[in-house]
Length: 374
Image (cartoon, rainbow, N blue to C red; front, side, top):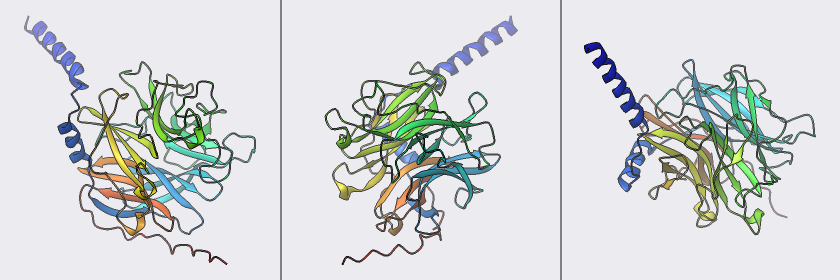
């Protein structure tokens, strides 16, 4: 009887644990403040990745951990378009370039011949967790936006998927699905994504809150009357196999009706979902670009933070834009990676932290000279 009682007790505790693991709590002002206090990074360490000359720019860090080391995928723009690169670090502060993982195509017929901006998919989202890049069907996956036009985010951009069975810590070309999985030209394109599409972030929906296995958060520009003049908003799509995607819902998730809301990145913090994202130009060009967050119980409905920006322009190296978050917590310290752009339009990757770790000695090279007007 004692053994039977013990088994029943253990079973009851297990059921209770499962039932409360993702217990919803009302997202009040105090909850929002609690999250802010947990994730804020008031200390700017400075630049950690910069171009070696002014022929290219660096953008959009995604950080993961494997075998005791940290790795970063990031973008390089060289005038033609985006390619995706890989770097490694022992301490999150000092980084070494390794090589490319998605390059320009030699075949001009490829839909993504001139643009391949990639982001890691299916990462462990636990705040302060492993930050491992997890597999699906024995493959590591990246989502990316691509296009065939030359220039900075030029032409019609669509979303594609890429994968590899090899170690993601070694630079090599990821294989890509032949066609994009979402495009502004789709028959079911919505008013918010009928012009062009940008960054995308794919997570597992382990509890199938959406009824699907996977969620993609993406930002896109669109409008019901003039798509090219529309605002940029964050929306979502869902999939069960990482290859076939469909738009979810009848409205964007984050919408400020003007400017840009983009580059969602999801973490699970204190039994709530937190979306890091950036905003820009909501009140005009002079507002610049800055990093924000929102909170959700169900991955679909989000409460926007109304307080101070997480990261904004304040230093010579980020005095034009400080935006595009990737945030990890390791050994009690929060590292907020972001894209830093100065008024000379030099672009690199910087970090703000929750603890004062000193100042980086890395700087941009001398800015390009402005051409004199005749």
